[in-house]
Image (cartoon, rainbow, N blue to C red; front, top):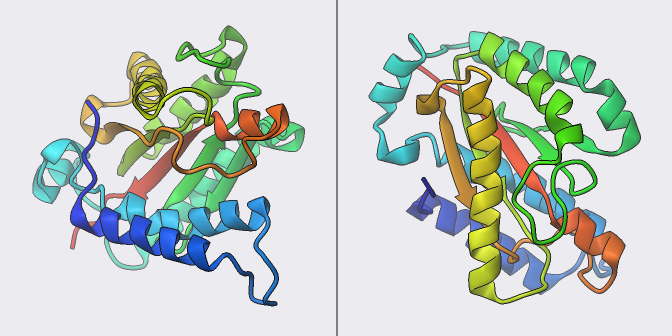
Length: 225
């Protein structure tokens, strides 16, 4: 099911748009695509955090689904250990540039899956060669089950807005569906599509378009209070 952006998410996206319009880094020079991508990553934690009531469930229902939420200093320790385990098992993929793992300011872990491993152009089918990587991620997130997972699909700019929106939703749902087959509880999963509106690289080159054809996984702590 596609998640509809809540007001807090809209504010975050509006902030991103405003900063992009300014288009300048701290030294007054125009931002590079890499810097823009990093900015999305920093603000993405707030967007992901706003999705805690995913699938229109209340926070209490989600806490119940994971057997009780995290509290206090335990939140940071729990998410730090999970991030370390993801870094460990995905080290080959990270070194190859096929996976990126980042820790956001609200303890959310962001895992970015690139087109090099996950999807062909115009396709929402996960490449068989990526199953092993998906299995590694699924094993870690089932071990650390006091988290909610928001999966966000993205596309390059080729094709219409409507086409790319649908494709991005299908890509996110493909990842969510695979995780379900590997034992990740459905109550923890939310699939969203953001179409072509959040590029992290230029769409003028194939290399840039390949970076934009991606799926981002936000692993968020379920907090008790």
